[in-house]
Length: 544
Ligand SMILES: Nc1nc2c(ncn2[C@@H]2O[C@H](COP(=O)(O)OP(=O)(O)OP(=O)(O)O)[C@@H](O)[C@H]2O)c(=O)[nH]1
Image (cartoon, rainbow, N blue to C red; front, side, top):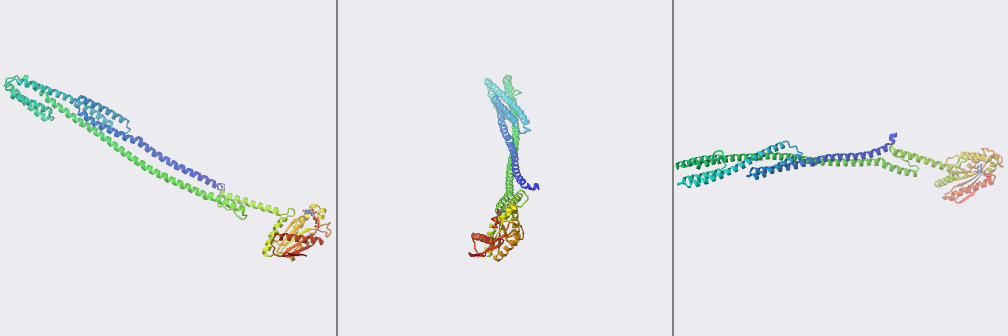
């Protein structure tokens, strides 16, 4: 019962807590989702994007390295080689630094870079060798040219030396051809041709009885043997070939590293695109869920508000209007359904109004009752008379008013004392009320030792009978009255007036009382313990 009685407060509290909880859930849900989204975005911006950036930077540096190694490979002198090498070294340092700063796990890149550095060193060594050999070759060519010029000068001193000169010119041309030739087998053929030419030259010199040792041997030394021009050229070609091969190898290696980096960049790019797509999808999903949960929360809140409105507000409004009506209309009933505080409040209001009505009625009774005798007082008589006259006029009834006075009551009081007088009045009042038979008849105390009766729908004849019945009843009470000069017992005198015509005014009431009073005066005057009557109509009434 106690829990029932607190039902509305609980309901209201739960509803409030429900709304608060609902909004906390929605806010928490949104915050969690946004935090997750933030983490993914942070990962994307802090990790993936820098990785892509590093990969792009590394790729550019590696591509530059390919150009630099080409420059190194094609260096024709030491300054150019050294410049290219320094640039390559600083580029490698920069690549290594980029690699250290890069968070990406590049498993093979350090190994590849180490190999690349080693290969670049090899290439650099070959380039250096090639430059040396080139220089030696040039020196050899210069020495050969000097030697040939000396030979030409010596041969010109010999008579009929045209054939030998021609042979020397041929040697010069073939040696020049060697410098320009880049194919080994061609050089070998030129070598064979030079061999035969030098042999022929030697024979010619022998034929001319000239010492070929001084003339031809230096030329042969310059052309053939390990230090000769041909061998130098062959060596130079070999180193050149090795340099080109190493250069190609290094560039292929760089291309491998670059394609590896490009592939990693492609993978990272793809991953970041997938991450971005995922973030996009998640953001759309989260915003959808947040909107749905927000709308749900709003509708639920509206539902709770509507329910509270129906359950509490409307019932309170109804209670208020019912209380307002009930306080003005005595018959109105307060009725609120349910078994909660509001229903209990309605019951309390009902009880309170009932109590007020009871008290009102008790108060009214008190104001309309004579405290001594317990019968209606003069105010009650005034009311009853007005009602009776109204009813009588509507129904065309006759109305009789009887004014009653206890005979010699002053003497009674003086003899039996005031308390005795009171007791006598109570007995008389009770007897008068008992004697009036009709429910609709009225008997009240008019004041002092006077009583007054109203007899609705009672004509003059009936009134006469009733007056006599009343007078006889009091006399029969046999209340001793030793001081009365007319009887041994208490007696009463009665004056009655009967109205038998329509006359709707306050004057009617006054006239009835006045006529009754006159009749009473007459009864007193005629010797007391009797009844006198006044019957009147249409303003024309007579006293009997
Ligand atoms: N004990 C008592 N006496 C009352 C009460 N009201 C009026 N009386 C007395 O009733 C007496 C009325 O006296 P009077 O008006 O002279 O009339 P009476 O003595 O009855 O004389 P008549 O009417 O001429 O027979 C007074 O002495 C009043 O004091 C009451 O409530 N109790």
